[in-house]
Image (cartoon, rainbow, N blue to C red; front, side, top):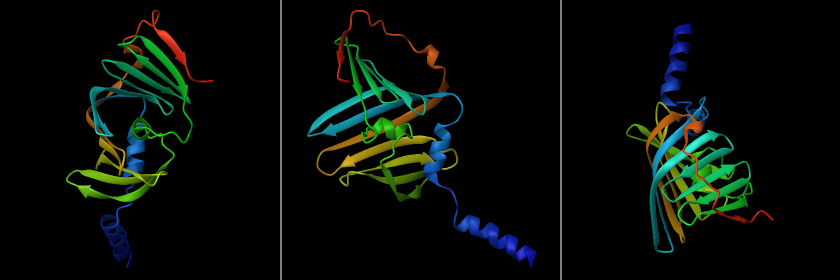
Length: 192
C-alpha cells in the first residue's frame, strides 16, 4: 500500500509539476553577487524604431542600470539618473511604484505584473503576463532548469513593442565598471 502511495505522489509530481517558472526566474536573479547581462534592446513606438546593444547590471533588488555607447540609466531605489554621454548631460528624476519599464521586469522588480500562465517551448518556459494597464502584455522566455532569462517582450496594441534579447549573463563586480568623468556635464533635476 505504501509503495502505491509513493508512486502516486511521484507520478503526480511528473504529471502536475509544482514548478513556478516566474519564481525560478526570481531565484536566478537573487543568486549571490551582481549580474551583468549582455543584451540587445529594440523598440518600435509610433512607427519610430530604436535599437541598441548594451549591458544591464543587476546590483541588487532596487539597484540596477543599463549602459550602452550613448547613455547610462541608473535605477536606485526611487531615483533614476540618466547620463547622456553624447550630449554631456545628467538628468535626475524620481520613479513611483506604478512606473513601469522593461528593466523593472528584467530585474524582477515589478509589482504591476499579473501572470497568465506559461507553456513549454523546447528547453524554455514562455511565461505570459499582463500589466495593470489592460493594453500592455508580454512574455518572458526562461530556461527550464535554471530560471535564466533569455528574452522579454512587452507589447501594447496601439502604441509600442519592446524586446530584449539576452545573449549572456555573468557574475560581475560592479566596482570594475568604467567610471564616467562627469565634471563638464550639464545637470538637469526633475525631482522637484
